[in-house]
Length: 129
Image 1: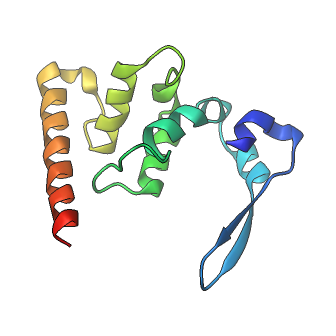
Image 2: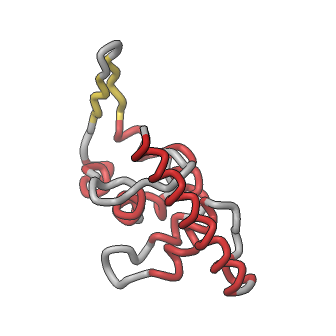
């Protein structure tokens, strides 16, 4: 998020540490490799997929969510500013393999129902564990 606000003006390093390993990543270099539209919409991506108050998408980790975002950053353009519910729905449908939400409302409705069922199933498994 810092890179989103500072852009190319700053050299930003991210420290990633586990009990086994410590790595430093040059966030400013990653910033330079991302398309400008994706950089502009990083906050929307973070709000929909990665902030502390958002549940996860069942079956989709950070890498798959990022891959869809980098392919379609325009879908999260209005998040947090002017509302973009249809675009966010389309982003979620891309995650679950229904790339053209405009096919029919029934198709998207089916995808949303499938996603809800997957989330409920995942949630039950986590509760039992």
